[in-house]
Amino acid sequence: MDNVIIIRYSEIHLKGKNRAFFENILKRNIINKLVGIECRTEFFYGRYVICDYSQEHERVILNKLRQVFGIFSLSVAKRTTTAIDSIAEAAKSICPKNGTFRVTVNRADKTLPYTSVQLSAEIGGRLLEYNSDLEVDLHAPKSVVYIDVRDGNTAYVYSESVSGAGGMPIGSAGRGLTLLSGGIDSPVSTYMMAKRGLKLTALHFWSYPYTSLEARQKVLDLAKVLSDFTGKTEVIVVPFTKVQEAIHAHAESNYMITLVRRAMMRIAEKIAEAKGCQCIINGEDLGQVASQTMESIIVTNSVVKHTPVFRPLIGFDKIDIIDMAKKIGTYEISIQPFEDCCTVFLPDSPVTKPTIRRAEANEAKIVNYEDLIEEAVNNAEIFVIPEK
Ligand code: ATP
Ligand code: MG
Image 1 (cartoon, rainbow, N blue to C red):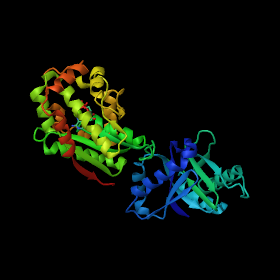
Image 2 (image 1 turned 180 degrees about the vertical axis):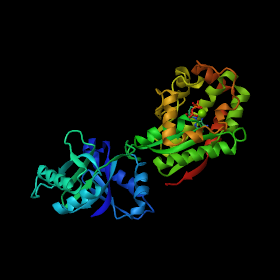
Image 3 (image 1 turned 180 degrees about the horizontal axis):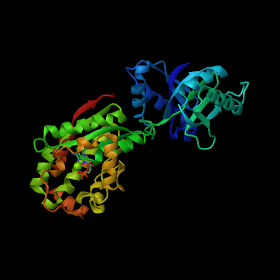
Image 4 (image 1 turned 90 degrees about the horizontal axis):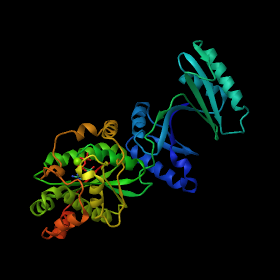
């Protein structure tokens, strides 16, 4: 009898013919996540099993696996042969100390000399003999002892499951470029799209010295927390100072934010193309601030030529975004008070209903605007956050 961790995966079972594609990516992600911990990953239909690990690593492995998208739930189990005595020993070792229980058997190996009903009755009986504080309740038990009897003379016995991160395996949905500011929202939008299987590259606009070294470090710290879920991640930092100064010098002040947003999107699309990212993601949320009214989003979006822009937070209330930020561990970093470039040269009254025509007229006033955009793209710095 040895200890193993059973991994059940989420929506992959819906994938029909593409199932192997998703399974292989999940398998690779699990193996990458456990690099450095001595253990083995086995596969049997519809499940993965981690085995041959030292007991002291069990918690660490479980916690790491809970950060892998595509995993629905996990159980620590005893693995035994299919002999009734071995299964009974395993069941005794995990059965509750008292209260009501039930035994539930799933028997994949139909060649065995017992039926599911016979096995559950037999094991239930032996548990009652073993511990007189237990009582059977088939309908609403406090605990369930699960026995999963598989081919190859193997049975898994367990009583609890913990939930996994859900979603789809990272890399199974393509690549995206996520606009990561130091705020509360964009780490959450990043998390949400990673959860749907996108492999992400992060992009940050940095206006040094208006925004500090600490502001850049904050974004790298956020990316590091997110890398628990996203895996190894590149953070591209674009020097944005000259673009912002030029906009400030030439454009109407109430169009400052609109033009800054449009410049960000132009740069983002160029970088997405260069990096093979198929979409752009940001943390915009309808109506949250002046730059996120319907009109502002239309005017910003109109500079993007070929790339879909995903806004996973568009319909969320701020309070729900904050809850999610707390849950994924980014909130405490996001509320550190370092200025982001959007607050540099902030006008007193930003336009809430900008028009494309007026935005373009303002951009036309900026000398060498295209060159400034190109220069920002070319001078981007890349930081690599490793897999943890
Ligand atoms: P956040 O909490 O993400 O900063 P916010 O409510 O402060 O969001 P804005 O500052 O208006 O919103 O930004 C909207 C979105 O634009 C952000 O969620 C982010 O995706 C992107 N963005 C804003 N500033 C930057 C930046 N300096 N670098 C990269 N992306 C940015
Ligand atoms: Mg912000």
